[in-house]
Image (cartoon, rainbow, N blue to C red; front, side, top):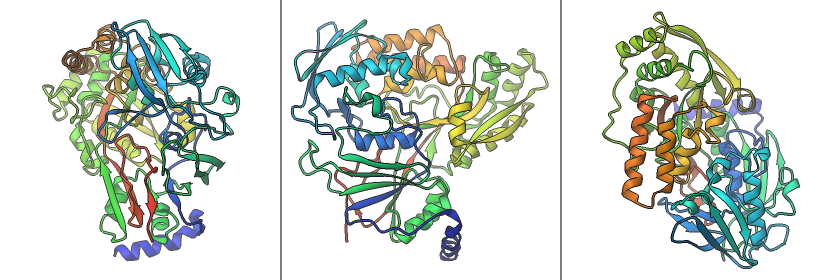
Length: 499
């Protein structure tokens, strides 16, 4: 039966725009789900752009497979005793793809660019405590902070915190120029991104591949056909239903890792009826999160309270994630002036199948409390421009972040850059807890504060974080050395293609 399905898919592929292509040996071909809206590393916003960033650029630090901060373009860092001044030492001899050596002035220019509100980087809020950045010689950068911050180095592992050449900032959107293992060659929206090996990469012997082609193939059926034809070697971040179709295929390995990536129902806290915290809490009470995991993710995820996953030391396991409480939801709606519920539209991004299913399942659940939902499906590029942060009610999702602070502060603090582009949430107690968590040097105190934060957002609900999503890649078994990343990135530095 499965073979018959694959033959049908193969026949259908002629209508899906798939064309057999032969690439040079040592080039890996990877299917991604959508086009990139930008090539500028400091303003990226979606997963496919993060993948591109990680292949072409480096940050001062990186996250290893165990979630620990490791040196990248910085070799070491040290703080003053009050944790308000940090100095980073840079690698010598690292070159941008255009040939010039990376220097401290490039790091200064990047940080100042991210902090520039006009640039629109979502990492700006992460650096809100930075009052001065200066080069101290050619290979040393000094940061002065307005408050103590023990986790400051962690911020430089964020997706947007990539070092760029100060003299090429104006052209990064069309001609990327990084220090990473692969160099930009070309980009054809709707088709592919082509990258070539960086022969001057600072890590000896890496990368092993001659090049990378990111093929833009939104449809699950087309990705399956391309995997079986050999047109692609890896399908990145595959959907749960694709896993079910491929898990018994002998030539394909399914590689899965638990993550802090999440999806949820976003309610704009400044727009009626969601400006009333009782309405938001009622929506949360009407949702059975385990049902969402089972029905939307086909069991390939975990319930959670916030973006903090249940396997984290910071997760508040004292708060139980129970079934829907219909009576409580109806009582809250009555108190808010909606005894018979209300009607609303829920916007869903086309091309993100789990978010589309999340909307369908949630809309059925909300009927039980009188909330009548009309589903509105919106193309992905339009969704990012017109829906995210603007519509009253929509399904959205975000990648794992590199640290506990960056997982929650930008999303929940009133000054957070993602907060201002999502639910527009304001809570003085939450602000205080997140500020204190940043400032403390005590791991035990930090755990306590983040657990209190999770309790606070159960009382004053910003929106519904439905679950954490497992990250899965479908990999041709000829690919050697590949491992899925909890950050959903593609680490290809040690990957090769066997015969």
